[in-house]
Image 1 (tube, protein in one colour):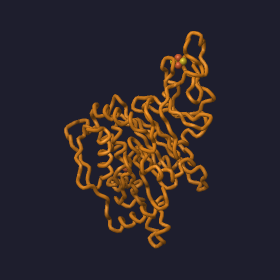
Image 2: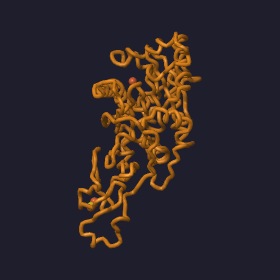
Image 3: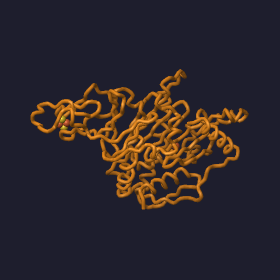
Image 4: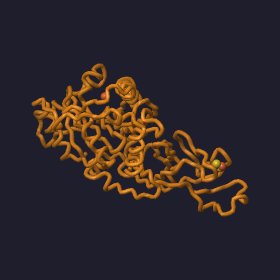
Length: 378
Ligand code: FES
Ligand SMILES: [Fe+2]
């Protein structure tokens, strides 16, 4: 975040805390619960959103070294992110050119080449076919030329983005819009990956995103955990193109009131949530950042693969126990937020109460769902 943005947000936070004034939408927004439960709604989202818009897939430091890889299932499409010898990250279809076997699982590191577990076809770190046992039986398939299907992929300022359409064009300037320079200022390219966690949850992918978009619930649901350090329900909200930024100040922000406003900071005194369209949140906690992504199961509106990754500056002398901090963050999400969301999913699936409502103080939810609707078109 740029220093002038920090000063502006710190001033706004101190003002809102004093006035107890929340950013509000014009009106409440009724929502038909079937957008979370209906198979055709999910099919429309996969076609109209997941396959058309660049997806924020990973921290670059999740695949820090040549040969590092991570596998992800994105709305039913198996994707392999891999860093090559020149330092570029490739987004490849995790499917063998021979007969379609899955090539790699989980995350890890491969040598100069990796082999398919079925018949040992070998691929290099760019996805080019390098060896083929008994290749004389495959005339026309040229080692050194044949390659895995590749998605348009770009690593920028420490985040890897991918377009789930191999024939499409990834226009990251357009996708990031006004948020580009602000994300760049975080310097995530200098961060180190401290760990990741994967869950499969019985909730629609949007419920995962929703949980980050309002602070109304924080003093209640999180009263025994993060609720103690945040300023009640006070938050700041700004839409940034299709994305958005929420700032939840911590009590320590008040310590600056007597200082010269030119020195005011917000990053050390707030939880900052960037909702990255369509399916991710990047959360700055001050000393570290978290990236949470939600990938729908195309066959089940109520099932979502969630991937949480934790990173902090590579040059860090603070002596913080990152493992413990990650354990705490995972506990809040799993035991508090996602537990409630799985209940919401089951209740909406019962189908008796069709309508739910986003309040005027839930402007972040209203905006996310409006952006989702606009992306789907009429
Ligand atoms: S399916 Fe991969 S080598 Fe046969
Ligand atoms: Fe929460």
